[in-house]
Image (cartoon, rainbow, N blue to C red; front, side, top):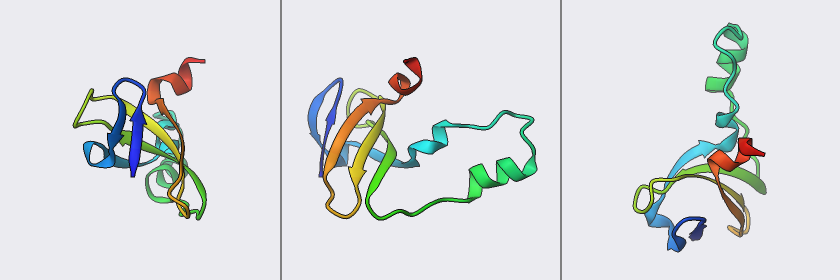
Length: 88
């Protein structure tokens, strides 16, 4: 699989480290309560198809990226800087 880093261009996936679902960026408030924190930390979907993942470009620019891809076809639809998600 290849990923196109917004900073570095087209790269082999071995330069990146998978970190989990991009929904982990939607962290609850510190006082959200035990049930909400339990769900955030321990409950995960495992969908077949369209997903948004968080990847770290450790073998390159060090950016955190959100990769939109299909888990069935392995097609990568989009790559964006994780900071851009909340900037707009």
